[in-house]
Image 1 (spheres, rainbow, N blue to C red):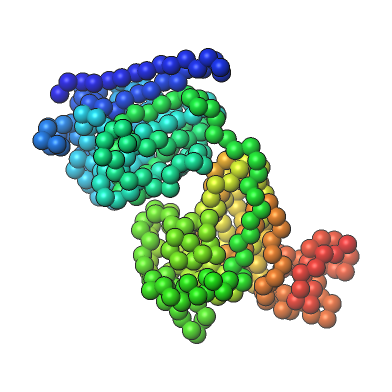
Image 2: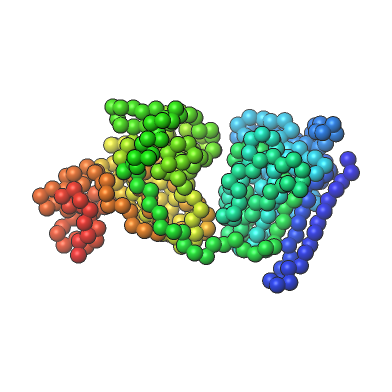
Amino acid sequence: MKKIFTLIAASVLAIGVQAQTYSFAGISADAISIDANGEKSTTTMDEATIPSVNYTGSGDYMNVSFSNIPNVKVAYKNGSTKNNILKFGESFLQVDGKNGVIIISNLTAGELVTLKVSAKGSTASVFEAQKGCVANAANPASISKAASLDEYVEVKFEATADEMEIKETAGGFRVTTLTIGNGGGAVTPSDPTPAKIWNFSQTSDAAKSALAGNADWTFVEASNRYTYNVEIAKDTYVDLASIGFADGAGIEVGRSGGKIDAGNLRIDIDKRVQINASNGVYKIKNLVKGDKVAIRCASASSSEAREFAVTNADISTVAAPTEDYNEAQLTVATNGDVVLTQTKGINLIAVAVNTELPTSGITTLKADAAKNGAIYNLAGQKVANSYKGVAIMNGKKVVMK
């Protein structure tokens, strides 16, 4: 096959930088290098024989680089071997499986990377910032298959480190070009995220009605609980509203390194949300550097304290106690998502962005026990009358001065 390679360097005089565009069209077998867990092969696409790459590993990353596209790799990892997982067509590179990752190195914080992409088939492609970058807020949530190169869609990511990882999490994708450089300018939002509260301790009437009419959710009367009776696939994240729980719009759930089995995502009415699995993940989406996020949570176990590991914030963990809830305050480190990964099941009671947590719906054991003048702080510890700050007394949240 004739090797086709395009490098366009365009000066952007207003800001004194260059944008470089690399093409994935017609990459030859000689230009492909594989560090491990893969082998070169060939396959047939559109009645032509083209280079391809087989994934020969199982549970380990394969990294593929290209001699004519510096500082760029395509990584792939799966639980089993896959033939022709990468296909190098005349006009694009195709990644056939979900969870393909594009890695770009030697970047400068603030630098913009733009991909022209399409879904490879009937399943829409979904691109997310995995590491070292933040997605442009204008990026489409999902991308359908384009009928021609002219219809390919741009997705943009701004570097927050010298290396970024962009992950496709749905059904595979095609990419035709990659541009590195400021191009149309930075995508960093400058304004804080508008104030927002998710109060899972008070389920809205609209959410209750929608859950009751949704066949994907099963009501358990004894526990006043809805369970999601659809499996959420390994390393797949879904917005709670997209699966029928409107009160959770803007928060995604999934499980790092595994799936959430049917029945293990739970909505306890007027109490909490719970993922009954180790490494369950909550993503608070599309935040801005400096945003203030408050979290109220508790262990789902009465005997084992647990914690969230926190990504993209000024604190690394949030404790989830056994007998009472905990409230944690954090500051967003870079534009993007705050990710909470639990050790085991944790009850998520409320989240607030750039505002205070709700005071209504608090009915924890310690709050109920705070009678006859007994006072507890928000960690569930009994304190003296001289305590200063927010506390629980007589079952209510009060401010001690």
